[in-house]
Length: 69
Image (cartoon, rainbow, N blue to C red; front, side, top):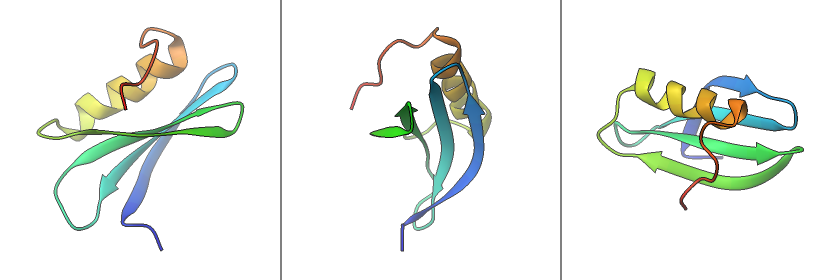
């Protein structure tokens, strides 16, 4: 069982970004994928859900180049 829940997903040509929320803490993150391969999770402490959704959308649109794990 994971310690987060998926809130939404964004899809690009070969990328996917799942917006997630930590169950134990009030923080959001994005789980990044390229061609269905998970790259990892980037957590955004202190950011709103809307801000994190924008980061996910930027990833699949190619605006955000590389997650900083």
